[in-house]
Amino acid sequence: MNLQQSFQVQDFRYEVRLYHGELSFALLNRPRRVRIPKADDWINFMDDEIYEDVAYQVPVWQVLKHVVGIVQAWLRRYRVRYFTFNAATVRKIQVYERLLQRYLPDDYAYSFDFNAFHVYIVEAS
Image (cartoon, rainbow, N blue to C red; front, side):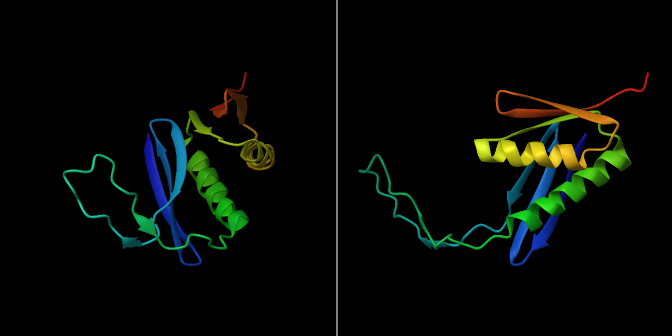
């Protein structure tokens, strides 16, 4: 099942995707390019592009609230049987686990291993 939905918080556009069982969300409007390096056939390693300052004040909890709402709606509407998502840092693992404990519907369960959360539906017996 492939689902996607975008939303906006302040001046930032985000997209939540569930693609072949993997959940992800990303920032859509990236910082603009300031300088693009010139192509030179004699240089094997070109300089990286220089971007604007990306020290934005992003309302993280507001973004996560939108993501949780979208995922909850998908679980209710489409009865997604299984999906997974990754957590790159210890802090993200703690935050994501707390969100799952608080907002995951009762007929779903989750497990965690190797920096990945696995969310699945629990069949009533």
